[in-house]
Image: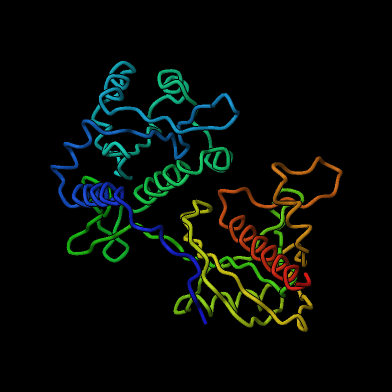
Length: 341
């Protein structure tokens, strides 16, 4: 039985500002003229062959560089590039200051010259994602995903004819056929036997890193069916219950929609049968091991043992943290019950 365990924040006065921003963005998606006008005073996030333009902070993290469209027009003119390139930008959102936000891939412009002019560096998103602020990482991921979709969707899969985008870049059209950006649904589940949680690792993971188990949804499957099938296939477990936690857009490898769940198994049936073609390893971890690992900020030194978990941006970290907190609360309740009156 699937049950939701997360709720939206309570309504407050600031919600009216959120509503106005969402309606503003929706209007720009429908009205090409309004979108073109918003572009003139909007913010621009640049990419070079899908690598975002970023700046390093004093704390060693990264932040995306946002330029006004008017500034970008001047920069492109100064570099001898056609300012009309800005017309290829894609709408990605609206700032707290009600400024429309766009992204643009400038792969046809010299990278080093543009980096110097914009005071930043184009860095591969796989290398930079976990160094971005939590509030801005999703915006950069969304921008890359939309730009990639436009670059790979220039022709209709039904007729083979060219597709044409609207001004905001929220859809492409070929005749009567309308295409919208798509994400691939993926379930990611943290399994518990009541005292321990199950984590696995793939060969491609950094050394020492373990995570919750994940897999793509098959056509026609429900969320519950996907979670049950994936756990049966990968580690040979049969689940007792599944509960929804949260979701996340994940830019790797190509725009996945991660659906996070918690699942339980019977303490009497925890024997693992790991599919080595899917996982390099999977094992049960205690609360103490998980709490220690959550405090680790970087991979353990080469040659030393140690558990490393996905960074805070990742939904897997959220699932693991939720499980650890639930376990701590359970232990606190047990302790309270044992204290004599």
